[in-house]
Length: 365
Ligand code: M6R
Image (cartoon, rainbow, N blue to C red):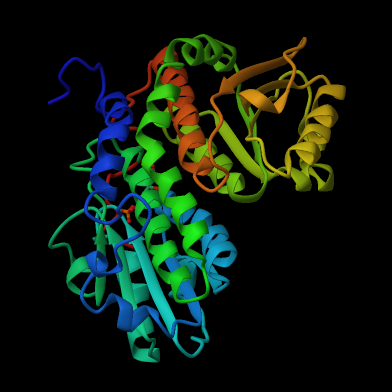
């Protein structure tokens, strides 16, 4: 039931504070991750992990890409991420003590399941699933399972599944990091940031009206670019995927540093450029990327930390996001991009919840 909402997608975007909270519940205290809540075998299986191989498709793949930044930064464990349809059709080497991590909302995506079954033959330490559907094939075939508590997701464009996957992945990363020297102090700092997420997502939802205004600029556009750096690069990828899926506007995402290696040639006043720019050490670099776009007449839409001092100017629209912890920033910055694509699609009159040519769950090859 959509209740007061015009579309399932909008309802699901607005459910995020609640479902993120549900996903952390029982798994963290005020200052610690409860490893045993991830499964009685968790400590045993995680302690010798030497490499994490993440496999997923679509939005779930983007969640895996964010997790790679976390796993390598917090746990210092090597992590590879690959789309399932590529992994399953090539020869691959599974390193010793690899944790094989599949991410899937439905738990029934054919390519993801095939990749898991194939990897089992090659051998790995354990299979961990991050999944939203209890009793799904993925859940049944994995050794460890962290369920996201998003509830049923009806809109074909994934929203709350993604942010709850990220919440679960961050909790998992902290558990893994504890076996690899994460200090109690740093753990407490990150757990505190996780607790702040529902409120921070609420703050972004309060910007809905302003984002709806911004979306008008995309109505007559045929192409768009999304930029991000570091763990915000996958957020840019996810923002571009949402816009493509439901508004049918061609959207490409690049790590901002790649701009001058090619895509800058596309930038003119017909090319809106969307950038996610939280206030981290990469901000200065990102600001110079923005200048490159502006100098070529591109219209910029910047989602930036209030404190980041990105100035509103001609052709630069700045949406100020309340300050967030650098580690949890990808979760928070996903939300304005979901709202942006939603409003563009509504203006264009597309079928938001059931975009053309797409199925909610891709259970065939
Ligand atoms: O159920 P899964 O998470 O395995 O699905 C993966 C993709 O099919 C899915 O994320 C798809 O890309 C969505 N339509 C994205 O919005």
